[in-house]
Image (cartoon, rainbow, N blue to C red; front, side):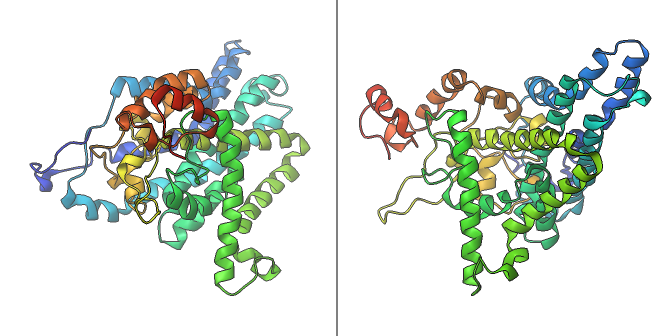
Length: 410
């Protein structure tokens, strides 16, 4: 719920979260922070326990952040209108996202080393890591890759060429460089419609959604970029256009980076590359799944979809995960104002709200019965029981008609 700020003395207003935005650096530094603890546990003779901190990424995502969201709850504060321009122009906030990148790549390299090293005596291990510890390393690196996609999302929406290139560099870790194209020119156009591969349908499980959105985003990005190149009077199949193709040059960054890492650390690194990449982009897609679940833009008399509004995105104002994800959970305002910088995004009255923060809900998306028990009634209530206004999955259409009435929206 947003807070009225008309009576706030603007000259005295300060962003109380200003320095807390540095929490975004927790994910890309977590492995480094764990090293002293791992060494200490080994020195104490607890060698099995010393490998547990290598699971810091999943532990942070599925345990610590949900606990903190529960403890600290919603934010409840919006910046005053009079401060929006000043806040948007304050470069400190964009530097908070820029600095993510060097820590991100340093952690990927550290993870690659830990995954393949045969002698970790300096950490107190005899030889290399056990297989389950290596899995923890790969998943922890995958978490920072997933958060990195969100960091790239923030930069990729901006007009500055530097930020757009930084977005592609950040996406290279998860082989998801095409997200830069599909999200901006595809998802934001088709959001909350059956045509959008990144908008989950009512009754669609995450496991049905995942292959649909991964393939749909890939196909859409290639088509969108080919259309752009054709508008420039060139053929997308002309080799001279390849480096100017934003999908291909983004994928090339991934191939070059991981090609170098595999050359340095050997073929034993290949499972690490695959695990962290797949897990990283699956985290993005679990967030996509919950952001628009069941929501549908209605068609106007002209047959076109209505303009995207705050009611077409699920919102959450839980402060801890918002700090961790640069206000991504204020998603309704983001879709209404896509170029607005994260520090100025607002919690909007009237937007549908999730019961908790994204970190709490990501794990629930994996369990369809729990997810539907929590969310289906919220979708129906959002539309005052009118199922014709819901984006329903074709597989469950007959059941939904039987339960809620005829006339389900296509």
